[in-house]
Structure formats: structure tokens, C-alpha cells
Image: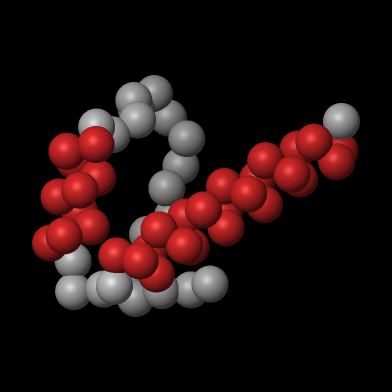
Length: 55
């Protein structure tokens, strides 16, 4: 699931972005927002289920 010019995000003390910030990123990108959301949901799903299976 590599994309163009991806940057790894590290967990820090950042707060989740607002809906307005997320919408701004999705609408100003040259990439398809549907594909970006699909990738984010897949990543979240793998993260969630991976944690549950190890518990």
C-alpha cells in the first residue's frame, strides 16, 4: 500500500486532526480521496484486529 511521497507518521503528543483539517487534505490533494480513505480504513482495521488477536 505504498503511495506517492509517503511520510511515516510517528506517534507523538499530537492531537487528532479536526474534520475541517481532514477535509482540507482530502480535497486539496491530486490523489483520489476515496482511495486515501480506503487505505486509512484498511490500516486502522489491521491495527485494531492485530491488537485484538494478540490479546
